[in-house]
Every structure is written in structure tokens, then in C-alpha cells.
Length: 273
Ligand code: PMM
Image 1 (cartoon, rainbow, N blue to C red):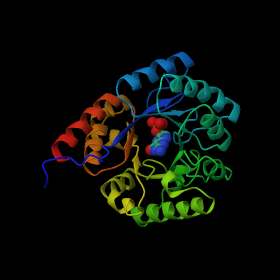
Image 2: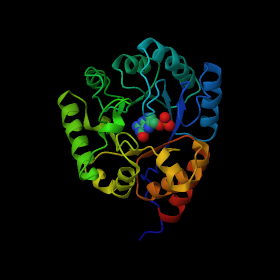
Image 3: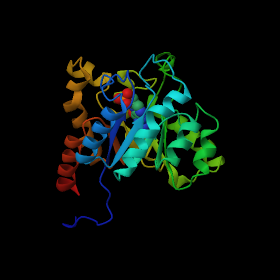
Image 4: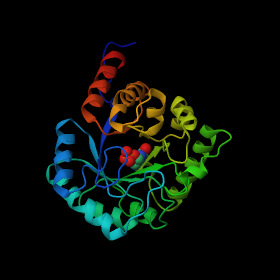
């Protein structure tokens, strides 16, 4: 083994979560007003977020949908301001209109938890913006119905096959392979057992040949494991997974508490790469 690190290695990236919603399960909706959202956005930048993921619609199990106008009003001003501060911004949306407006405001990544399934026009917007990266998450249905869709015989095989199908459909619509990042969709139509099985076998999803983003931050299955009812008490558990994912060369992690994750990734880089 060489004692030098290969120069072109890219460490795992940290995507900081900025939910501009009144009902996000993980941060209690405390970043709801524009000024509060920006205060938190500045903190995420200071802490070293590589990307800031701005979302206006809650994807919490059982959540009601909001109107497009409401979603636009929540996310576009925040994206514009974050871009002025020089941040790399992704927009967490399933709606093509919101994605289009966000790209216009300077977002360079579209994070679509439905992987293009919720809005048939999304693929066209992404194909028409070849400089944009597109996060395609594994998804089976909207928040209201997703817990009834957590039925698998072999969760890893089925998630892999369903992502593969999505990718084929998106490529047919003109999206370039270089634009695509895949995400197993931890907690979306999945039980705790499904989540753990996927996390143990991410290498099988890496075989699809695309970078992987993983979002476990403060999710309920971690609380169940360690007995933490409050999302904020799940950061240690989240961090343990991030360190492991950095070791396994995962492209990025989506997380609430950025600083600790940057530190953990730096430690793993020093130890192994
Ligand atoms: N999880 C949530 C929202 N958006 N996007 C991606 N790509 N992957 C995820 O796992 C994901 C996501 C739900 O969590 P939050 O309400 O804490 O943001």
C-alpha cells in the first residue's frame, strides 16, 4: 500500500439539511421563517457543509402535501440568499416547477425523494439542465401511504432493481448518467429492519455504478435502537453511521449536525486513505 493518498480521491461530502417547514420531525420546524432559515443556513456553511439541501415540503410519514405556491414561497428566497453567500445548494422537491425555479435561483442539485415518480415532467427539467446533478431516491409512494408499502421479500434486491428501473427510464428521457446520484431512501416505505439491511449492503447498490447519497440523520429507527425519543438525541448514532459510510466511500451523507460529520470524515480519511 502506498503511504501517499491518491490526489484525486474525493472524501464523503456532507449535505446539511435546511428544512423550511413548520412540521419537520427532526428539527421541530424551528427554521420556518426566512430569517430563522437563513440563520441556520449560515451556521451550516460555517460548520463546513459541502452542500445545503433546502426543502419546503415535509416528507414525514403521514404528512399532508402543501401547494406549489407555498413550497415556492418557502424555498426560493432561501436558495437565492444562500447562493449569494456562495453555498452549493440542492433543492429537496418532487415538483418539476419548483425544481425549475430553484435552478433559476442558482441550485445546482435537485434532490427528488420520488426519483421522478411523483411528477412526470421532472425528468424533462433535469434533462434540459445537463449541468444539474439529480438525486434519485428509492420511493414507493407519498407520505400518507408509504408505511403501507413497506413490503419486501428481499429488500436489498428489490430496492436495487427498482432504482435500476428508475435509472433506465430517466436515461431514456435524456438525462445523462453523469447527472445521476442514487439514494436507498432510508425510512421511506421501510421498517427499521429494512433500513438496517440496506445499510449493511450498500455495496450491492454501489454495483449499479452511480454515486450514493445516504440520509439517516436523526431518523426514528436510530431512536428505536438507542432509546432516544427526541430526534436531537440521535446525533451520536447518526455519526457512527457516517464514519462507517466514509470508510466505504459513499459519495455523500445528508445530515442535520454538520460539524461532527465533517470531523468524523476527516478522521476516517486520515486513518485509511
Ligand atoms: N430524507 C428526508 C428528506 N429528504 N432526501 C434524500 N435524498 N434522502 C433522504 O434520506 C431524505 C431526503 C427526511 O428527513 P428530514 O425530514 O429529516 O429531512
